[in-house]
Image 1 (cartoon, rainbow, N blue to C red):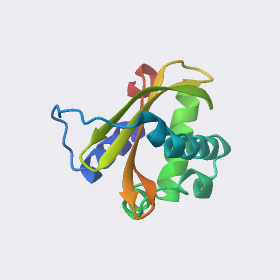
Image 2: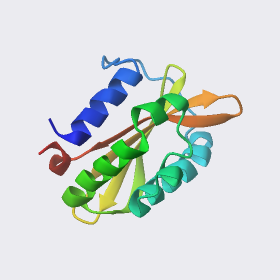
Image 3: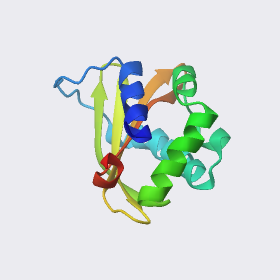
Length: 142
């Protein structure tokens, strides 16, 4: 089984695995993106640099335990070999799922366009932390 797929499966387990269709709850997109975009930018910059501390800076405790530094290094190596480094992104969708807020980006990487990057945010006091992260594209599924 591919490392990225294992990573996504682990994160699904962390998030409770609720894959069923859920009713969408209205969300203030501008308010969400005010915190989500800077976190996503930092996370993706950390990915490019191979800097785990930067990449995981806004992870909640469970994300850090599911994706420790050694797993990050392997995941990054696998992804970079298939799709290259991250270049840019646009917002595709923002939705609320229970207490979590999900932001889906369409990202450009060196070797592949249209990579789906899903970042799940969960409130933690005054801030929102990353509680889920998924990368999906045809190249990553091979």
